[in-house]
Length: 269
Length: 287
Image 1 (spheres, helix red, strand yellow):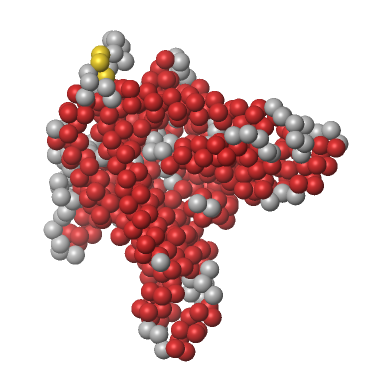
Image 2: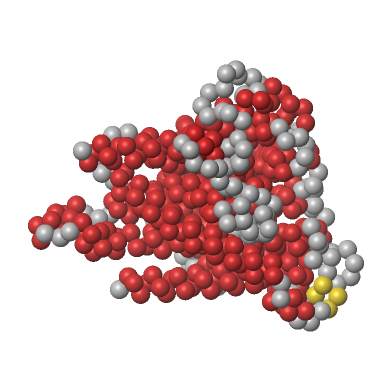
């Protein structure tokens, strides 16, 4: 009795989380006039909305932009944050504690305070409508530094000493000797960084105006609020489906890693 | 490790220092400086003393955006805790298809807020939205989910809960799993009620998670942007004007950089104050 009650609630829960996505995908493939009454399946399926959308906005180009920006940022965050995390965990130097406190301070700083001045910096650097505006300010990340610091602390010092005796520089020790030992951390940092970069909208809206350089969520947002979709819901929804699809597919295959990574972002707090 | 001075660690942290100086320390200082100026980026900056602050305290929209955010949080935080904790407790029992349920609850967490917003905008639609469609079928009159001044912010709060709750289900689940089953067995022998077990065994175990949910949700509420930007543009009658949307409008629609910086400064102070109060409150409860 109690058990079936548990299942009923969980199933209702699961449906309420999945149904909106199902509805959106169906709606994006249904003719405009059927949309108003669509609850489950449309009477006929069409890809007309997708064709119209490809016609109106450079969605393919925005996909490439997003993949490019998110990949470079992810790579940068892994490299630079690992370097800082390693220095904090395994090296003794003057000012180390200060750096640590700076990182904690920066993490608690609300972005509302830096948003306007950072935009002005980008303007003064001449980076408006350049990939650099989307990449450079995000190449290092406080939270990633803390994650790397923590996992480097648990790495045996003997490995580092052995590396030094073999004549390895610090960079080779980090990336060749130690990286294979902390793969879970690299995966976590990679997933969190890629996803948050991929999903970011406010910053691109501010620094990119040239349509060819827009990221995918930005383009879809502007398409949805602007007049170019001509109030055709199906076309708007088609663009939203296309934006959701890459992450959805990745989630289906790497579900476990996604959940672990995101959860660890809370647990390690 | 030798005792001599080495430049190596400084080289490793150099990129971070550069990042910190250019994108954290300088902006904080410059933001404070901007609050005493009027500037539209193009013409020269004008010193304006405390005008921006005076203007803010008399600005109806500043107070409205603050009230909207509080209204959002009052709905969002309890709803999020109840749904997350409830589903986590159910998932923590001995059931089948656990991975499927977990994954389906988690799906909205990883999807872009833009997608979620566009999708829910249609579900909330007055004439043809699914929710009103169902309501009218069961004979209830239609609700102006996004078109009524009283419903618009609660609608956004419900959507935000739906989007984020999966993460907190997982976090609560982790917290629940740290409680040894023997505690509950001992409590059963002592004849403790379900409520007593929850209050004395479960709650202390999930207290850190609870604190995190509250803090993250608070930050989330003060960061609301894309939801009102896409769904309502801040309307109807500014009832969904969020703090970030207001900063955005002042800066990038009206080009009041000094005033926008003042708003940003003030909202940051408010967020930090609220979080410190929450920390105090929950930590004393912990003892």
